[in-house]
Amino acid sequence: MSNARTALDRCTELARITADAPRIERVYLSAEHAAANTLVAEWMERAGLRTWQDAVGNLCGRREGRTDGLPALMIGSHLDTVPDAGAYDGPLGVIMAIAVAERLRGHDLPFALEVIAFNDEEGTRFGTALLGSQAVAGRWQEHWWDQSGRDGLTLRRAFADFGLDSGRVSEAARTPAELVGYLEAHIEQGPYIEAENRSLGFVTAIAGARRFQLSIVGQAGHAGGTPYPRRRDALASACEAITMIERVARESGEDGGIATVGRIQVQPGAVNVIPGQADFTLDLRAATDARRDAMWDGIRAEIERICASRGTRLEVLETHSASACECASWLRDAIATGIRTTGDDDPRGLWSKAGHDAMAMGAICDVAMLFIRCREGVSHNPAEDVREVDVARGINAYEQAVLEVARTYDSSGGPDAPAPRTAARSGAVPALRAGA
Ligand code: HGY
Ligand code: MN
Ligand code: MN
Image (cartoon, rainbow, N blue to C red; front, side):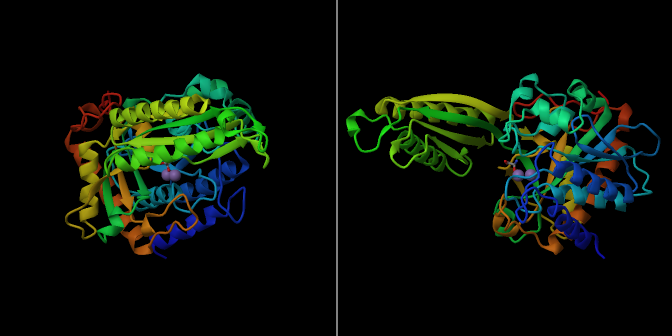
């Protein structure tokens, strides 16, 4: 059976591990997280990797290079999902990485090869995203512990229930000296590769993101007896704000900012009561942190103006922030070289409007990503779909990209010499050369 067929069958098998069948939902520190780690660890071990679960619940696999203890090229993606997810966002990247590790068994590599299955890239349960990869990047924040999910359990409690020790989180952190770089394969989650009838693309940069929990507070009142001039309707204020948010983002243009309101809840939520409070989420992204932050400043000012005109007020809680991350030229070029071996002699580069674990890993090592076409760009939806031929080309490109990284790394002197050139990254920690 082809690697691509096996990869797709494994995505289907993994999709059966869900908290909400027949919908797909696997969240951080859940029974489904544990079951997925167990299944994927079997696949990693069949590929000849030594496996372990790290101090925050990421699943890791490693095979030594030409000598033991060398810095590792880390390849992988995430196993957690959004609610009612598709089967490929995250898992396909982990499973393709395992396929590459299997193909390179016995290869003389100048580095160790590690496959990592991050958990909580999406931030579905506790609101903050990239928890697993931020821990590996040594960026865990103490204030996250008190964040709670919809079940009311705090991250601290869920951590303990999962059998993890909150005092040992730092053991998941890796140092720049341990890493050659990080590569991730992922479905594009957008329509651009398909629009050019390509199978693959390489990522130039990953959008910077910020997430907020916004509350508009007004005054609950009688739906019949309250005259309009006296109303302080929180939901009507929120509706005006949400249509403004969409207009601002639309008008910012193709390479402008992107803003989405994903969830709204209203209190008290009765048919005959004027809403006293409207709580809604805001997801903002842009190619640069400066553009992202400018859009937030404009949106916040506009919401304040709407609230002032309606006698309501705005409360803001920022739940996530991740800097935009440029892919390192030497790794990006290796991905493009891999794509060329699949017959696409002019590989397409594009910036990722979706966030990825690579943006967290970019704080401690050079990163690059391989995109795989997905049908109509649909993702975060059970209709998410990929073609076997694209996955086959993706695995071939990925394998060749890893071999190209090995050639470049070897020729630059490997762990004892400065890493190949690294593109300066916008806003992120200055690129650290491997072995630093
Ligand atoms: O939200 C995102 O961009 C990613 O799918 N977590
Ligand atoms: Mn996602
Ligand atoms: Mn993803």
